[in-house]
Image (cartoon, rainbow, N blue to C red; front, top):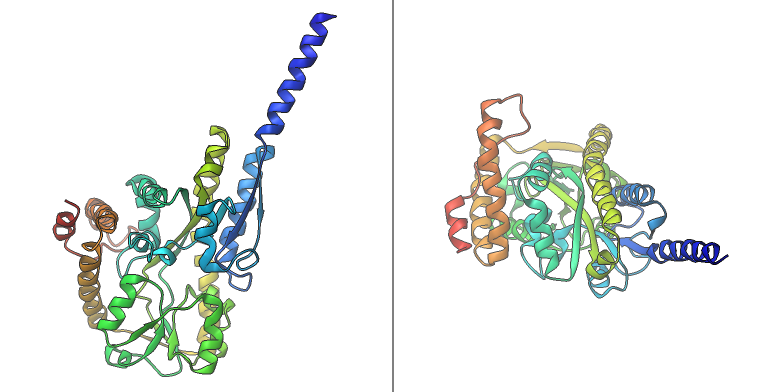
Length: 360
């Protein structure tokens, strides 16, 4: 009888342990449901809930449902919510190193971000920078270069940017635009449509063609200037409160990492297919122009100078850029040897030694 009682107690204890191990998280994002970027967040949550089984349940809320988009960082940092989807560049005011973790001006493409994160040490730098704010970070979404400016006055060259008030995200991007004669206006994605409609701004960039189409920008602009030199790719992910992360078992943590990796690759193919479809629709709705190669080469030179200046203002930023440039230099050996059949281009980027000196 005593053995049966002991066995029963062991079963009860085991069940209690399983119940105690179950976690319920609240997660939101910076994107409202009207913008297609939210599909990257939703797909991750779906994968995570499937892979973690009964150990973790993530309840997801669209952007703005719990806190304003600009307050998602603080909500995760404080532990008000356990997780938040983001674009790191929104937090550059807290640390300028968040900017290259989100995007680069005329530098990385989407495959470069994936390569760098997965095999060249990039993932560690996300956790180092977010770790300063009590968070763990899992990159889980990537898009290729952004659309470019959408305006009601045609932009074909750098002279056409003079005096234009343009909605633009990014620290380096804003500085570069100012050097080109324009001025940066910052606003959330959900505010762009009305600002264009009312003429509050002369034009705007936001994201890839499919996301811009979901934002309705074709209804309030006539022209689209390509390519999007300001953001040659964009990276998205999930901020996780460190205490919430530490409460998970190693197995559940690993499941979340696997979900993020799978989502990263899925997001690239998903957004490229959707961007292709949206481009065809934009061709029917607006007039599309393209900068010539000489103009793009000039922009590259100016972008390099802005990156060098900005990186050297903050050791964290310099460290991130140095890692990215070291990756580009390393990968260039194989990428250039197998051109034109390899992935993308090796950009004529910033001076790596100048940025290296800023980390010392």
